[in-house]
Every structure is written in C-alpha cells, then in structure tokens.
Length: 111
Image (cartoon, rainbow, N blue to C red; front, side, top):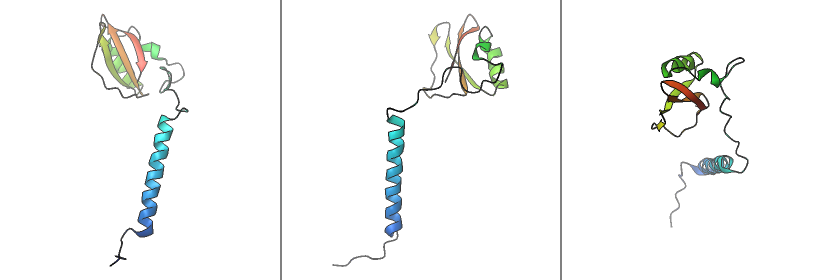
C-alpha cells in the first residue's frame, strides 16, 4: 500500500478547514440565538439632533425623496393610496419607506 506523503494542505489545510467550520457555526448561532437583538426603532439610524422621520409627513413623494437625499438616506414608496407596491424584504436602517395617500406622505418607517 502506498501512502502519498506529498499532501499540499497538510496540517495547515486541516487547521484552516476546522477554523472555517467553527466560525460559520458561531455566526449561525449568533444570528439565530435567543439573544438576537430587535431591529432598531423606526426613527433610529441617521437622524441628527433636531431631525425626525416625522419631518417627511405631509410632503409629496418627490419632496420627501429630496429631503431623504439631503439626509443621505435611501428611500422608497411602499404603498400608494392603500395599494402595496412590490419591495424587497431586506432591512436597511438607512432607508425610509413612504406610504402615500392623495399625493402626500402619510406614514414613514425605516427599513
């Protein structure tokens, strides 16, 4: 029986494999464990002193978008006149979601 001693990975390769498996298991445990933090509140994130997400209420969608741009926030319209619009389900603290009725923003959430 011939044993190939010319293994390129050797001990280092084995160590690397074990380290990768261990770190991926830790990440999964962190994201799924009971200590997972709640998402930030709807007004958390990029608000500065004197600024509030309520500042968007009553603005047109276009004006709300310009205000969001000045605050360096992403923005999107998630509903118009009670009709939901297709959106991605990813949560982004630096994005505001607008619900518009009659051409005016009536609700603002983060995500």
